[in-house]
Length: 202
Ligand code: ADP
Ligand code: ZN
Image (cartoon, rainbow, N blue to C red; front, top):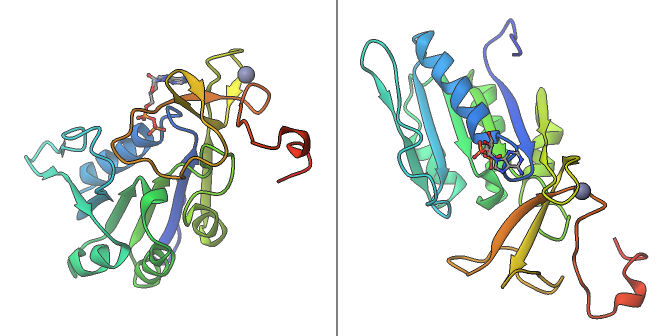
């Protein structure tokens, strides 16, 4: 944990799906509540998977729940003037405005904790995560376990009908029949139409 002498900084929790980003975010939120800080938690409305997980309660009965937001500016509008800690989960789904919002809140004296997966199913940067990482005081990159080889996994494998999704498939599939696995670089598969040039492309 980073303790600045002047309040207000940005912490990013990045990593592949299943790497424990939400667990870590909740751990930090719970501790902030125990420290009697005024906390608000937000998450992209696109993530409806874990409704209820964010109800973090303190011994004095305070309950913090994640507020779903459609856009980064909505976070700015909803943050109360006395809020000391702002946590944002699934930040890769938010628009690039999250970079300005996170920095503005940090400058204002808020401890900002942002969690999100930093690479998409193609192993390319996801949303504003790279920019958030570059302006953060603290970055943690968590790993999951590769379901193929058992090594440390840092990439999201998208499967459609059990098969690796092609490069051309959209970055965000809402309500699709796709599933995800955590895989390492060596076991990650993104088939391309032109397989011959695959290794030369980014
Ligand atoms: P994230 O927010 O990064 O998607 P979560 O905090 O929701 O991660 O979930 C992390 C939990 O997922 C782990 O504690 C573990 O119990 C479980 N899990 C499922 N599959 C894996 C995997 N392949 N590697 C590591 N943990 C996994
Ligand atoms: Zn592997």
